[in-house]
Length: 130
Image 1 (cartoon, rainbow, N blue to C red):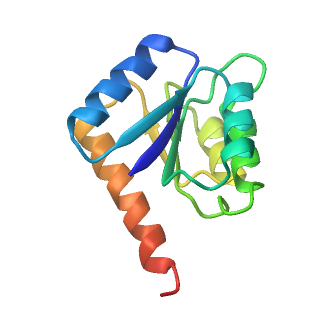
Image 2: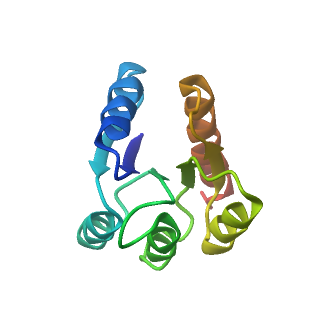
């Protein structure tokens, strides 16, 4: 599964990458800003199986990145999991309204993250026409 993880905290990105690659099921690319993520997505198109992104980032936040993902041809149904410290209902509502598939509060458990990633991708695959 190819994932693009987006977070302005480089330590979080490195931890995510190491933990997810250790499972052996994931190929993880990272972006350290919303702006960088949008550029990567626009250049590469629909090559990712899932997006994992933070909400609170300078300049372009995760909500705007989620909207950009949904506006990218081929990414309209790709799972977007918000992994953020923002636990307030208003943030969750904005994330889901922007097209998020799931919402995970930091600090998160990597087993739970793995389960949610796999469930999100299975759901999209089962909904796809054969």
